[in-house]
Image 1 (cartoon, rainbow over the protein chains, first blue to last red):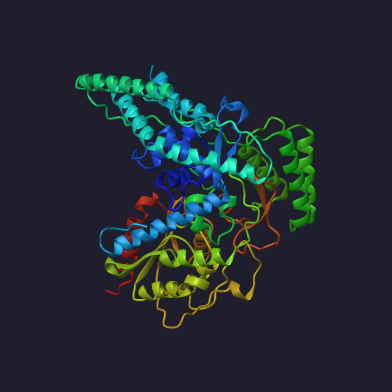
Image 2: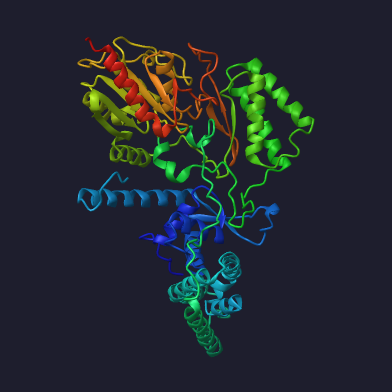
Length: 114
Length: 480
């Protein structure tokens, strides 16, 4: 099976990694957090969301974990960031920070970004 | 109705994808339908779904079809003839017709909704309105994620374990993914007892704490606790009460704790160095404010091995100042050696730089006087907030105790991290002070209590308050 492309890391996949950085979430939770962390600009639909989740799982960047028994969410699968996922998210963040610095150096951006 | 339409759309996805995620995709749509009511929101929901459908469907087929070819050829390599049932046959005519129909229904519904949209005022509430605030990792005394000062800044944005249960969008407690059962409680207690006996500098104290914890366990005091955070806090309190040491901590982390937090590869170090250099070693601003008051905003204490020259340049740029304000309001700690390096500029002779983590060594004295430095007798103000943390608190604590600085702002976070961290399992670890360090100023350090300001003002007002104090002091000291 051909690998789904994660290089360069698609924006949706990066946002999913970020949303899982500090907690495990199920699909809808990820969608809510991504919308929140992008100020509503990115609302992941089910197709894009689960397609990205599948790619991330294949690359072991996230893993499935059980839902807690007591939340009534047994049917739902939750996802957790792996150390490889954390590493990738970090390097992507650093790459973006590098771009921002260039943008600032070129005087496209003003103020104290980064 | 909407649900049925989406179920039809979902049938167009490859069967592998449907089987794996169809149920969850439907659930997600159900959740959105439940939470996103009203014409505008519903309209946006459908636009989202259609756009998502148009983008993700071709991609799924691109990846799904070759999967069959590759899986068959893989089997053939074994040399054993076999038959395969091809699940992912091309889209059938019936399915295509269903798709066309459902598209027409959706488009028809949309156009009807659009016609009537003018009757409704667009509500200002965005789709996310009403969603509970996202829980974030909040500083807690001695949190495991902060114990390793080196590199903690580099990973702060993405790696801090969430110490609080997440809140589900529906308002229910969501999926911590970890359940504290009796076996896990037993494991934590046993490991705590063993670690205390092996590592705590006070063997008698270790014995007493172990006895107390086992007694609580026997009495069933832990049986009802299923929340890791509650369990860790209770154990911390009991260990501190019996052991009479504020640096004993039990930590709970929802995210799995790394197996070998101390192991750093050369790549990690290279990344850490480049991160520090890109961030000016956390020296965010150094400038001379009106009336000759120097201002240094320092958001972390970086490793002097990488950042010594940056620190020296920053301090040199303030050399002409008549007073200095150190802004530690966003300082999340780091390497205490950097604090000592900076403090050297504030004295004309070596001063003992107390650290609750280590017994005195020759490096525990500041390298004062610094040649050419003129700040040793200038008034010093430190700005603090409730987020000022760890090494940032050490800097505040030591200068406050030596009466070398006036602290302006809020009581700091209260993380001394004097204990050495011992990982117990994926979710628990404990901090144990392994050497006895005498605090020259008081019985306890700032663990759990923070460093109280001399002048208490809100963090946001601290700079203005400190500027006034500095200017007042300079005015009074000027000879008339």
